[in-house]
Length: 369
Image (cartoon, rainbow, N blue to C red; front, side, top):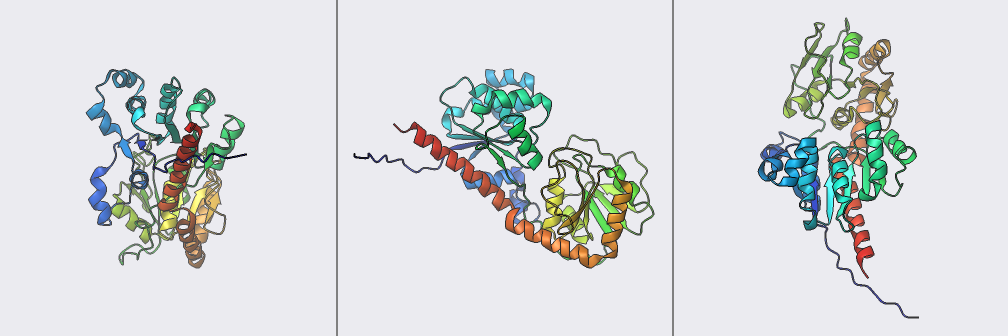
């Protein structure tokens, strides 16, 4: 019996990335000058030689009838429609969030021949998303999630195939966020926190009242829609809160003994950006043991957990690390190793790129007669 060899040209897929924000092209020079971390979508774009559509693209190209119609459902649906209008020019489409990926999948459903579609599922567990993930599984070739709780939910509740649901860790740019010396005039007993997403700052504020510690809160986030609970609140004299630019935030981490990330109960990786940035800076982490925040901190190795909303437990954990600086340093050093070994931006890019390219090859094989 003879075998016919099929020659498939190994070509990089033509990739379109849909980014539901305004891509920060203006940061390129700041990244080169070590004043801004590399944006993850630019790192992935470079690795895949991809094109990007973002909110700014809507302003330039959003005049088509389908995009205008999609605008009625919101900007993310309009971005999905803009990507859909170009789908014949690409082999693969990457949606940076289910808020774009779901409407794109709806539009792709009408076509038997379509590009591959991979997406980030930041939080796939809300009930309103359940019917979409169930009905559109065929139009979502690969879904990346960051929390084991989300992975479990996708398998058990949404019925997603294990072959297309990928649990991957989030990342930090460990070249920008790195171990740096403290400023000489930094308060000797200083700790910090950062971000807004699901942050339980009221619990942290209560926990540090009367302690011999300076607490600085970088209470801002470009992504979060949550209320800033440090505003219009009377803060104790040892606590301050304001917005920090990236360079100042990095120095804030460097000047701090350790980083505290207090969280309200949630089922996804809320707080992960601050946690990983702190780890990359070589700092021990104290965070809340929510249902979703269980995959990164290993109790006693690179940080400590406290129950969500438990003022006393958080106060005790802060006092413990203040009284045991060598333990905090050991945990911080381990956190930095974790980042370098498994949680870097480069590893995040490679994990996604490997799936995109292997899915493209699989589709080529199926299309070959």
